[in-house]
Length: 119
Image (cartoon, rainbow, N blue to C red; front, side, top):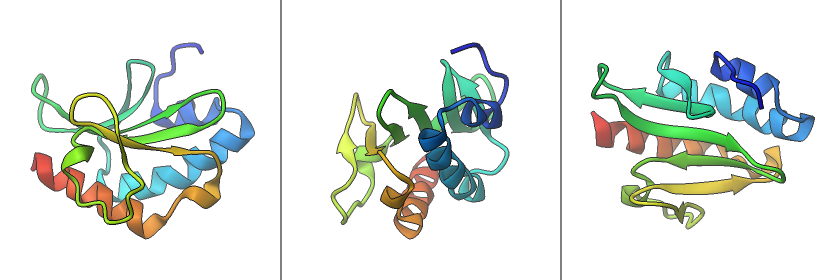
């Protein structure tokens, strides 16, 4: 994938099924973390705090068969759904294979919790 300047360019560059997932995720993320998304290490990341001490909160990364929606401190989040799976370090993520896998209310709750952990 070529270097992309913005989160919206990244999403627009994805194959249709992944782009649909990204397009459904973006408003959810941007409602809780407005104006702080950027492409970092090749995929969208939303961070808080002034540079250089920015604290990453959430990310979206496309793979061949799914899109990962993850939270940097996701293992500290109260996830009664059990859908968040531990990833590296303190991260947790969910693999999305269709837009139907996105529960807007649940994901918004995760995002608020993740933001509040960094605030």
